[in-house]
Image (cartoon, rainbow, N blue to C red):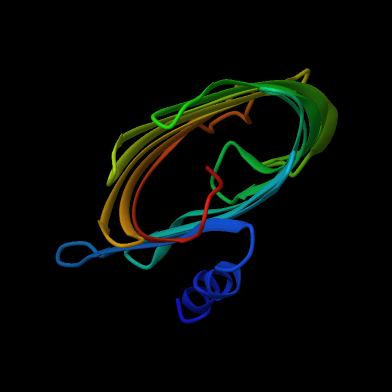
Length: 235
């Protein structure tokens, strides 16, 4: 905990005067009594945009324990760069790394490229869709067997500004290859409390079509975070 907190607020100070914006989030939940549980989740996003180029970075960590025994541990790092080339159309390059110590797939890395379209770009509703292809490397949870294949990628990202202090987001991603189809759905509800401080409730569902025997194909995570938004997003 002592190592995570300073990192969450390091970049906001330096980003205020630059074309950067992002969010730093931290959520902690503990219970005691007949059983003791603990969960910690941290999230950091950093975006940069200048003219037709935009870069989006995300890192996330989740750790859960029940009666002193770790029951969940997941790390995620992604980076995507977009190049707008004609009005609402753009090309993208994306890289993603995920490690889940208790999920159906232990480790997954993907590198993809493709095209996207800003279907809605108004102040209230924003809706982007993407279609691309690339490569994926993954490691099975129990056997540690590694494989790599070509994949197709589909993504959709919808944001709805409910009011000046609240917002809704639904994001879907599908990466499909010969060895496995990975699907992720993320639903988020955000409520600003004061200034740049806000609380968020996030529900994430991940599904792998092909996992080792005895493991579940679907994992879900619910996170309640207190967050800080920094920088100024372009209009």
